[in-house]
Image 1 (cartoon, rainbow, N blue to C red):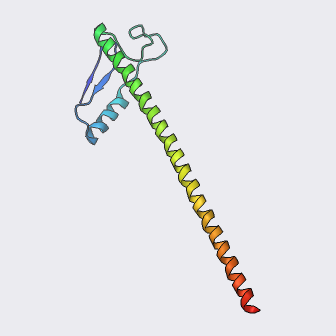
Image 2 (image 1 turned 90 degrees about the horizontal axis):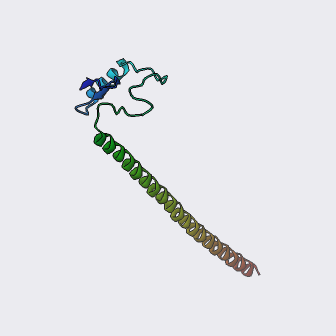
Image 3 (image 1 turned 90 degrees about the vertical axis):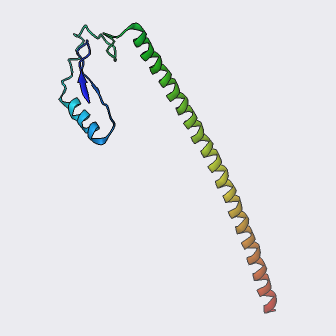
Length: 126
């Protein structure tokens, strides 16, 4: 793990491995690093979310394209998940309606059976 200072002055952390100890060290380092003032007085980076100073125009363009493409993939995955949830709701609704139909048919069969039993009891009493 190493802490680097890009030309704009904002520190960045490069984590070499992704083990739990490494993540803990990276978190501690990020807490120790002082954030620059965000009052707009910094002319080096402007209002960009990513520091572009010291990088070529092609690199900045590549990062921007990657960010937009990842956002596109995330939106597409979200739409797919939303459609899947909607489909699950429809299927579950069909299953519940079918289950309710079966329950009603069973209750009607029990009522018919009960009517026959009572009719037989009345005939046997006579």
